[in-house]
Image (cartoon, rainbow, N blue to C red; front, top):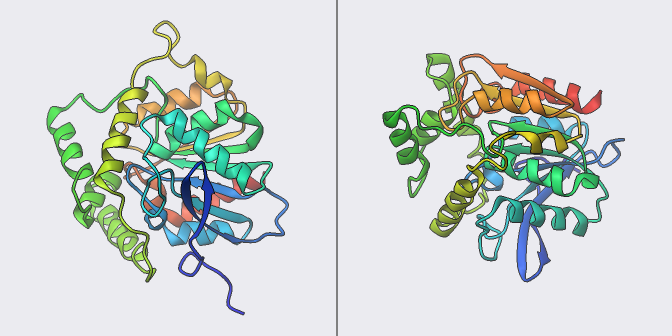
Length: 287
């Protein structure tokens, strides 16, 4: 019998409160660790992950890819609040019969992961935050031309390879080549998850706006000190979407955090250096 992989894992659904949440689950069920639960970026679905990463991590544990309410193949009204997205994910984790998971959140998924770890700490053993930032962090806005380009590429009706290269990868020839290779890998699956709707994009943009204000003007990152789980933080040296300085703020304020900054990389450092990331992630999850 052939082993299940990123390319062959069945898309399954679990219904909660009238919404059907799509997920894929595969890997090593005999691992002495909980499954690794993935929360995806703005507008992203099940096939926006890199198979080199998901299969690389699934060799030593179960992995679970997940679409939030209304996202891609999931049904229901898309959420407009990060905390509601986090609560939905917690409901799905419990509905799958899991007492605890390791949690990986990328970009918007990282916003959700932080809230999930704070609001449902008993569910999370370890936390991985990739290309993301804290509530009240520094927004992208210091260069109006860059901000305009980010908005243009991030809101394309049908995101293209050019959009992903600009938003996710470094600017060198090697970085661009890594971006092309990622783009090819993520399109290898034959039955691709459908693209998210315009309604999802609008709802998630609203959720991002709610995430911008500081919770406490005097101590804006106090809420991060509520996150007690061992935490892995990764970003590229120059993130055009969520400024890299936000990764430092998280590392300084989450009590048990470690920080990785990959060179010549942008928002999706893990996609630019997938083999390096898998090695670092396995070490973190296993130690």
